[in-house]
Image (cartoon, rainbow, N blue to C red; front, side, top):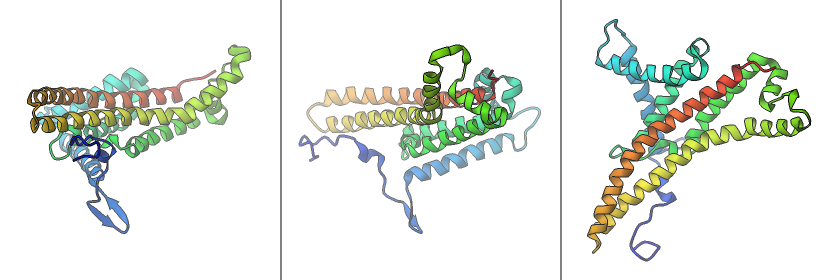
Length: 256
């Protein structure tokens, strides 16, 4: 019997907590860390296998790799930064996209069944990498004064409201931006996993009660949620990288 008295094991924060698989020197290594590590290995191994010995006439694996690489390069980077400026950032954005996408896909993989990005530490680190890149590029491109104008939206034509705009833009760019960048990915994966767990557990619970018809409905919803999650997982990887490109575009843009 669960704590709510009805016997239904309602999913909650316990669905996101895992016991350590191993402890080395006081450092605990759990399932989420393992999935993140496997994701890293898979992404590196795939592109190494696809392009390690690239051929003029590509094989099947190289064709798949080129299609994925080209999707990010042309569909996100070139569209945001342009071909000339964007080319140097393509490897970084491709790595981000596929790392995030595979981290998310674990949610619907048997035995794994958990999206790594639903643990906020991972989106925070990725957002921090993008943030540091944006700050460094802005300093490099514009210098200290130019950086200040960039992050504050300095524009003399705004007149009397300029001080207010500068304060808002300063906090928005330096404090709110990395937070929202991370939370957008985290919140979608967290909510999606919670809903998927709820319908999966409900299907099993109802199947073992007199509400067998309800179990069928819940099972259909589980399948629908899985399909929807597959869509959301790809979209969130796309949005994260699109925003990263947008930030870099802002860093490289000329401000007067």
